[in-house]
Image 1 (spheres, chains in turn red, yellow, orange, blue):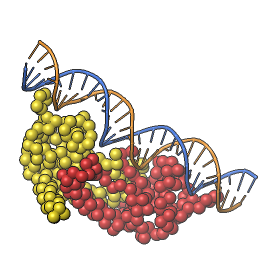
Image 2 (tube, chains in turn cyan, blue, orange, red):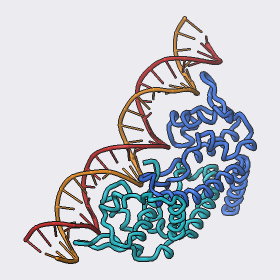
Image 3 (cartoon, protein in one colour):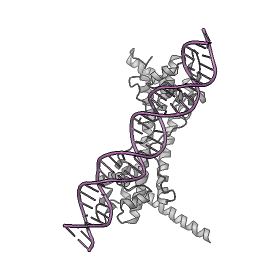
Image 4 (cartoon, chains in turn orange, blue, purple, red):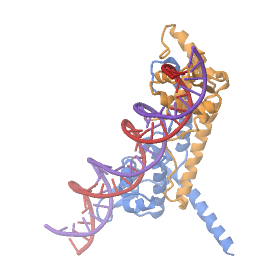
Length: 151
Length: 151
DNA sequence: GCCATCTGTAACAACACAAGTGACATGACG
DNA sequence: CGTCATGTCACTTGTGTTGTTACAGATGGC
């Protein structure tokens, strides 16, 4: 579990959902992601709350896209996940009153904030549709019956 | 232990070492960082291997700066620590053959690489001396404020 | 030589957090 | 009502930093 892969996984799922146009159960999605249905429901809860997907219980239920991919950016998904920590490094809070530590953390925070801003700006500028289109291009390039995951 | 604070801690220590000009034992440093001497030795081992600090055993031993702060950048310290993972998020490797996952991860990796490059460039452009100078400025500003308050 | 001091490491527990898993209540069809 | 699916809780697992204890090795003073 080296990295938090929720963002990547959700992007993956959303694009697949768009391709199927049918509702997908947590179980189908979990096989798509090679994981567990509970993990899927847990992770997608945030997307539901933001209105990017909707879920229905009972017979024939499951998950459906509630918006076109062109209206969802990577940043939207990231935010829907609760804005998880981007960085693995961070400031030390061992001696909050030490001016040296403050100066160090300030310099570090500056650099990290710049990088974070760049990353979030980048995520906000890419829609899921763009990635889906890129995928289509790849698919044709391979000119294959190459599989798209579990489908 | 939310974040990896080794970089921040090492910057903190190095600046203090420069101000003291004497060798500091792991115990002194550990109190500086509000931690344990073993943690200090473990973390500073990388800095020693790169020649930024040197350590001496036995009586009167301890750690000393082996280079002026002006010749050490934040990036140097980061590298000396073994280039720990910068990001907490990352791609999912659940279905390496899935073209959708590949497209998603590629888009994500692009954005992250840009942010990483920016951050490392930023770290490489700042020397420890600059932070130390900033600290000195803060120190003076504070004592000035203290005087004005007292008056 | 002997002893106090300090580094260098190994070994292991603590802790945080994503991820995996089982159990079960709830709601929606047919 | 029975089945299928979500919603959620509680618990375990895996991984990496951090904290801690224990001990071997080197150094300098007596």
